[in-house]
Image (spheres, rainbow, N blue to C red):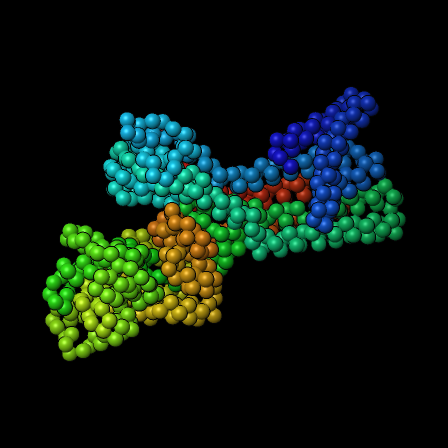
Length: 635
């Protein structure tokens, strides 16, 4: 039921109860009492009866609403019409508050859409024109003034400045961007005048994909949600049957019909599992929404619950623990013509998205080289790349790639001081050649992300029992990076093929739940093998957003620690809710069976308990993982 009609029906139920009570206890007016209670029963009972019958017809399930209706009618039948009206009124108020509270959790992500500006300044041949954002299409150029929000995903064509990306990536500090850098919808241009080329329309933007993914995640039930729904359905049937049995027991014990029916109705309310059923979704929905506002997308409650159990993490090195922005540090050419060799290598690497390839292309650009075109390019995972240029077949990669091509790197004719200096260091070496002839080699160096150390330290402090760093790089390079980040030598695994990573994760999984953290595009097999696959730095990447169970939109490793902490906190809140809900239900049932619990008090205990578990779950909406509450004011 929509929130607005439910609110009006709740107000009508309250008004009816108030009129009935006024007529009965204050004015002594039977007509006023009758009219008021009739309104309360109709406004509070008819919608609930309709919903219960619809669930029975469409889903073949007994809705918990049915328990409240049966109890209210039982109270009416024994002459306790006011108490039945109290039950319906409190139930209606509780349902309205729950709907509004759960709606708040669902709306938390959709609120991102409100951050999108309605119009944008589009650059034209005559200057600029203000147009609706919906009219922007790929290839358009928009002008961003200081303080303006980015209207669509794009790439900076001219200008430079700092942007607040907390709405998308969760990064609390402004990010400086220069021409060529991507910008995302709903982020804020803090300073400078930028010209941005539109890459995607509003329907395909990062924000639109975030909302679609989180909406799907909220609709997908976690294992504990499925269990609570399963339990609630069967328990509802048991409560109805138990109330009938209780009615017979009270009659056999010598109580009158009216008293026995009243007590059975009280027990029906006291034993209702509303709080148990709502305990899990209240926490899950709130956590999913808070995480999304902090730049972390969970693909559903199942991923959230599984991450809470993870105590072992495996990390890809390049682009995950390191910046992925390697730089060429040395070049060796067999014919001593470094520029010609680098030009050939850069032509092949132009087809690769690997960070090392980007470093090689950047070095060629720095030297003002002009790489030719290469065709028939083929990637060899964890080895290298091959293709064909005007002179024939060409390859580049690590020692395994060289061996595949028949190059013996320890051959006497390659024992030159220049090549030896490259291979003896702790930097990544890329070899290139034609067939079994080595053309040359380059070394590139990467460095750990500034946030990797802090993120790993936070995970260790939170109880991470096992960690592993995995890479296809040389052992010397892996040991250098791993040592900087606090990995023990036995936790560093180098020179790995994709299958080796899968095997290592499988071995870790035998000791408990394991998460693998990668770039979301490569390492697909490792992401799939882990109990939780986590893709990092995925803002703007459709492939990466779909690749893993959890997507970190920023490249901040502390976001991973925050997501793990939120998952564990959510599991704690669920346990708190279930413990309280079951405990309160047992207390009410015991009081109803042995201590003549009044029906209104049972209603207050039942509805109050339901509201408390919802509010406890909603506390997760304010989790510190959210960084959107401290954004600077914008124009």
